[in-house]
Image (cartoon, rainbow, N blue to C red; front, side, top):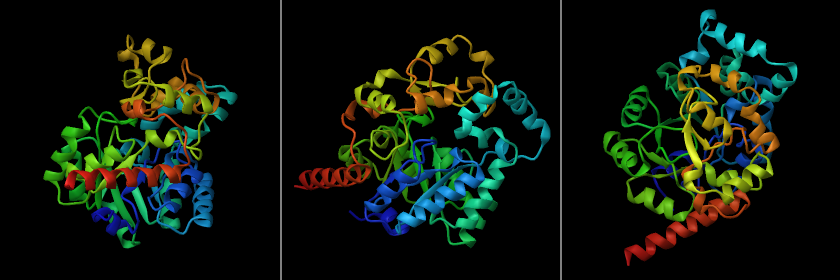
Amino acid sequence: MKTRITDLLGIDHPVLSAGMARVSQADLVVAVSNAGGMGCLGGVSFMPEALEAEIRDIKARCNKPYAVNLLLPDVLTSDEDSSWAPVRELWDRLSPADRTKLKGVEALLTQGAVKNQIDVVMEAVPPVIILTFATPKDFITQCHDKGIKVGALTGSIGGAQKAAEAGADFIIGQGTEGGGHTGHVGTMALIPGIVDAVSLPVLAAGGITDGRGLAAALSLGADGVWVGTRFIASDEAYGHEEFKQRVINGQSRDTVLTKSYTGKPLRAFRNDWTNAWEKRTDEIKGFPGQYAVAGPLVETGYQDGDLNEGMMPAGQGIQTVNKILPAGQIVTDMVSEAEAILQRLSR
């Protein structure tokens, strides 16, 4: 199955695993890339030294293209002390044990860490960098100077246009069905709009878990898919067994868009914490300060399987996920099923 995205990225299959914070670590990236897709490391989860080690691990086990996901909004890259003061204040209130627990979001709560992440990634020169929340033109130019391709994740047509103008090489359009940080427009409406608005290759994301989703995405004009939730239920994904089982057992109605963990709209499993904050929306701190408000709860879902209050991002496509599989098999099964569907429809 060849598309503009397989040609652009030098991969066999038009399937990319999402750069899910915490979930997408070296094991998952290697498995997806070695299967002919492209794995994406959730770079935001690592302090700079740990990020360097994780990329080194990927390179040691995989000679196929891979990607690194970075978050570069001004609020994280700013040197202005006043913008970090509220975050530091919240962080200082946490106990030493809670700070240790929060290692997966420490970079988002530490002034200068994201800039150091950038230095690490630019030194490593991965084949692809995926940007979330912001697409700085100067940074994209730096990537191109090093031969790095840049993809931009967005939930809107306007965001896709801005990314194209900034020089991105391809666009990932994520519908509101998707897990994690996401927008408010459905995939079915969003993807054709982006395809019409930009001339770049487009990946579809949000609610895509199998070959039916890949075939549908191609029919909408996309050149491939960016898949998150399906890969949570894989052998190689990082996460507690209770988290994976909840994906398998869950239904679409079990997820909710909430700002209660991060300060930005995030689709996750509904629980006691998200329910409580539905009545306290005016108290929610902005991104990334709400991470420190939620404290260890942003990690207890991944690490401890805390179903009652822990953050467990997941998309509405969970109702079609019913088994934990090797990530490589998820890639090949998805492509085989899509090919069979498209062949049948062409007849």
